[in-house]
Length: 343
Image (tube, rainbow, N blue to C red; front, top):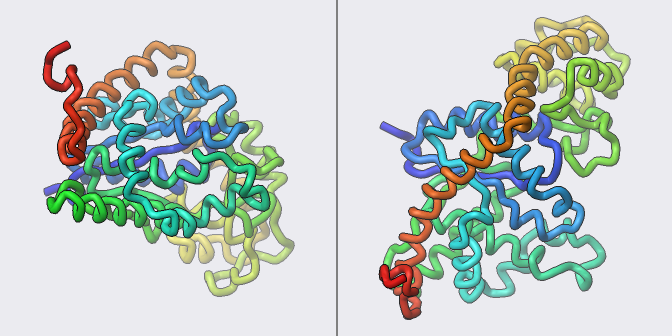
């Protein structure tokens, strides 16, 4: 029996996809897909429009994320892979949910404060209302489980609150309350230049991250330049306290080799980071080469990506439109002609 009924998750198409995205999210989605009844994996291209830098090269970035999904093991014959903008019901439901979202709820969203920084007055409405669109992304499919990182948990909680508010208005259980799935054993991949900061596309230094499309020479160079310390590898995790860069590299090796960090520490105990870096380089190259080659093939055959996206959107639209009709009826809106079969 499937552990999860309907799983939904997505990634913003904001340029290269990196090792942190793979180990921290997509690899876990592949495992979840094998243990769920239905899976929908979205590329949330409309979310990317909320920040100017992320909206550059949007169509190409969307195809790159789709290629990464497939290359990392998400099977498009078993899961719907689609672009958010190909399913208009996302934005329509978002407006309806806006009308149930008190400003106080949105004012508590920490990611708006982080992204807007000191320029809150200059931030756009899309960035402020981003969490409501994310709630619509989830609720339009009546998703039951949403795999997210700890930093996105608050957004799923808002989706639950909005689902409850709508259900109370309708006096019906229209939407299930989606459950955030946060894998406790998921590696938290940090910057190769600063072990206290997450690996991120926005970091100015390209040496801070491993891209899934990096070739072996680039991977080897980035690992050689990765920040470490001069102390030998300890035999226990406890001894890694206050050694963030050492913890990060050992954590990456542990994740790629499917071992615990405790086991990795024991195996490398007493050695210097030069030997760790060589073995880490080898396992990175062997793990990422098939992914890179598959991505290159797909990106050189973009018609194949587009067909997968269109097929996924057809599945998503069928489900979303069914749920949207129910919402419109509850809200007292006159049915659209196409929904009545009169077009």
